[in-house]
Every structure is written in structure tokens, then in C-alpha cells.
Image (cartoon, rainbow, N blue to C red; front, top):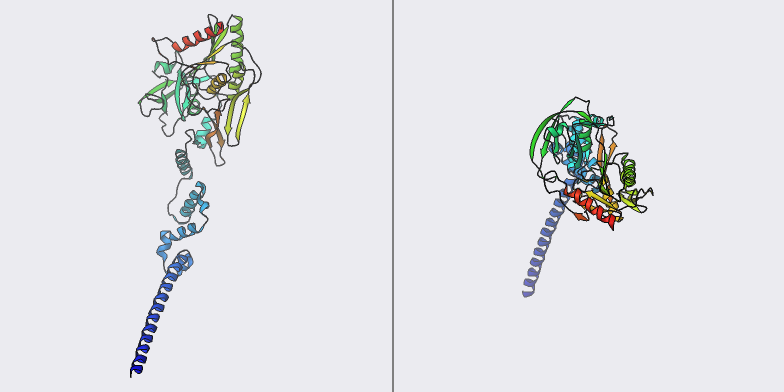
Length: 429
């Protein structure tokens, strides 16, 4: 009996084991089916035709199918702005009931694009604005009696001509242009302001200005002037003989600056000048070739400037056309900019001149304007100026050997006085 009871117990245990295994197999099968359905769901959601045949149109309308398609592509496909904009444009073209103005959209997109970069000089010019920017000038200055420079892509006043309508209206050095004839739809660069103010003599223009505490400061009082345009024949290079020091002031680096300075050095030398002061304060720059040629009047050989681009660095060297070996002092200030800074750095690092004044602006970048196939143009920074020794100028500037701010009694120029004294002492050494 005991043996028979043992057999029954064994049989019962075997039945329990079979039932437990069966339950485990059913549970496992259920998990497999659930996982398969989950994976299949993603596959189905990426198949528009299948979704539509199954009646899941809501997924199509919500755009999930587009997301699935995008996710299946290579990750790097959308690492370009053009690809992302193209996807949005395709979606609107295919499904949207709305429309948009292509030119206005282009302007908005490119303006927004420019705002996200660190290039303060990046601008998109639509065809109309580009046409007005590139119009031919008469060659003589036509405008309101102001010399402009540029700080972070914005035009500001570096000089107001004596007797000009701008001077009479109270325009001062450091004032920024906010609007011309009411147009506030852009940030006005130096080239745009100069082109807009180059009008027929007698024409009037309404200019709104902003007067910040410093060049870097935002805000400031705004005021509006109505000015009559006129032609101003202002000498770019002026000279004087101060004792035995020849003083040469250069307002801009124009196409003739080097030739004019060369002639001035010869004239002052014949009058008894034993040393020279080259004043490039408030000089907004101009032609790099003129900066090289001007530096070459004093530097016999060697590097004048390095130019850094995407392709690497190149060097502009002295031309060998030396005009004098007499001592030289160069006057600079916070408005000495661009190619004028190149000139100052070249003379300083070649140990050819003593720099006196204040640190320069630090505008050591080069902008180019490129025509666009769909109309208009793009202005952007394409290169940086470096000193002969490879030091950065952009956002840094050139530090003078003798630092002195403009001060003293009203109407006096202590920077100029110190430069003349320094030049005189160098001539006696």
C-alpha cells in the first residue's frame, strides 16, 4: 500500500509540474506576441500606404509619418540649415493651405541667420538695397559734412567738418546713425550711410542719430536732423612745420594717400624737418594697399601685415620705396581703425616709429560683398589682419608706446603736443 501511495504522489507531482510548465509557456508566448506587435507598430507607422489602408489617418495628419521618415535617414542629413529649411518648405508646399512671400521670407530667414552668428558685419542686401549701395559716386564728397567709421557693423561719426550743416545741427563725434529718411528697417553700416547721403547738391535728408555714452554702450539719446546735402572739398592730407618737426595728418587711406604723404615728406624735409609726426587719429582706414605703401615709405624691408583667411595666412611685405629714415612718431586714438591700425602696428613692430595716444579701435577684419544668384548680395567677414609678428588686431587694437588721453584746456590738443615734443627729442638723439 505504501508503494501504491508513493506512486500516486509521484503522479500528482508530475501533473503539477506539467501545468506549471504550460503556464510558463503561455506567458512566454504572450510576451513574444506583445513585443512583436510593439515593433511592428513602428514599422507600420512608417508606412503611409499601410496606415491609410488600416484607417489610421490621424497619424498621417499629425505628421508622425514625416518624423518617422526623417528619423530613418542618416543623422548628418540635417546638419545643414538648407536641408532643414528645405524640409519645412516641402511640407508647406505639399500640405499647407497658406502661402508666403518668397522675398520677404528670404530676408527674414537670412536676417535671423545673421543674428545667430558672431559676425557683426554679416548683412544680406536685397536687390533694391544692393543697387543703391553700389551706385557710382562722383568722386568728390557729397553729403552732410561728416566722416563715418564703423563699429560692430554700425556707422558712427568720427569727424564733423568745420562749417558743415552737420556741425551746425549739433552732430558730434561718436553719434551713431539710427535711421535715414525714416528707414529703421536695418542696421546702417558705413558703406550704406555713405551711399545714401551721396545725393545731389541741395537735396535734403532726414537723419536720426543715437548718442551713447561710449561706443560700446547701448541706448542713448536719439535726435533727428534735417540736413541739406552739399559737396565738401576737404583735403585728405594736411601738413605743417612745427619748429624742426614735420606734421602730417591723414584723414583716410584713399587711393592717393601714399603719394600725397610721400610728397609731403619731401616738402617738409626741404623746409628743414628733422623728424616727423604722422597723425592717423580718427582715421577709419580704407585701402590695405595704401597702408602697405604708406608703411613702406618708412620701412626698408620686412613684413607689413599678415592676412588670415580660410586658406591660411599670407604676408604683405614692404615695397622698398623708402622716402625717409628720419625719426617718426605716429599719433593714434580709439577711432584709428582697420587699415590705419595695420599701418600703426607695422611701424611699431618694425621699430620704425614711436606710437603716442590711445589704444586703437580693434577693427582688424576684412569684409567682402558677394553677389547672390537669386538677387542681392551678402556681406561677410572673410579675413583678419594680424601684425607683422602675428598678433591679433581685431577686438584688441594696437597699444601705443606712450599712452595719453585727450585732455587739457578747451581747444588744446595735448596728444599732438606730446607727439611733437617726442619727435623733437628723437631728432636730437
